[in-house]
Each structure stands twice: as structure tokens, then as C-alpha cells.
Image: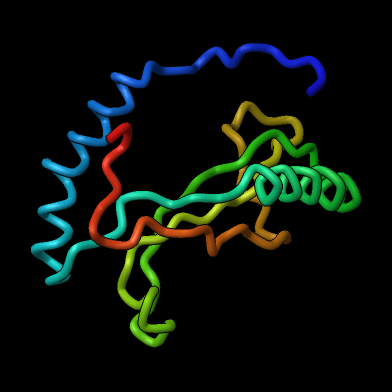
Length: 131
């Protein structure tokens, strides 16, 4: 498995359960009332898919002259003309970011590269983290 450093921003399983429960009880009902159906509350990507995307953005970004520094996660909603299993549901897509030369600006989206989407959404019924 190689060497790694323990990430600085880890949270406990209990904290993850609390955050998920807060979303399910405080945000999901508002969204579901407005769209008239239960919505997805989780998105899954395989380790291989994420690693491949990281390798892709590092390689292609460098080739385009970018100093790739991260990935921004955006929430989105599929349009009504998507496949029936996706139409109107929440999704998550990933955008590579780069440093802005000679600036203190926070990471900038790299809009000249493709985004990662189409993970497996947690189709209703909702997924409850840790349960």
C-alpha cells in the first residue's frame, strides 16, 4: 500500500452520523417538500475511479500549464430530460482546481478540463450513514 500521512481533517464515525442525521432531518425535508419526492442524500465513487480522476487532472492539467491543487465538490440537480432514474435528483460533480499565478486567490476551477460525475447516487430510500 505505500506510505501515507494521516489526513488532518478526519472526523469520527459518530460525527459523521451526526452530520448525516442533521442533513436528513433539517435539509432533506425542505428539499423533498419543494420537489415532491424523496431525494438522494449520498453519492458513491469507487477508489479506482477517484484515483484515475486525480491522475487525469494532474497529468492533463500540467500539460495545459496548470498548477493543480485540489478538487472542488459541487452539488447539482439533473434536468428533467435525464434518464428517469436520475431526472430531478441531486447529484455531485467534481471540478479540478488550480493555483492562480501571482495571486492569493483561493483555488480556481479549471474550466478547460472535464468534470467527474455519474457516481452512484443514494437513490431513495435515503442511505443513513453508519446504520
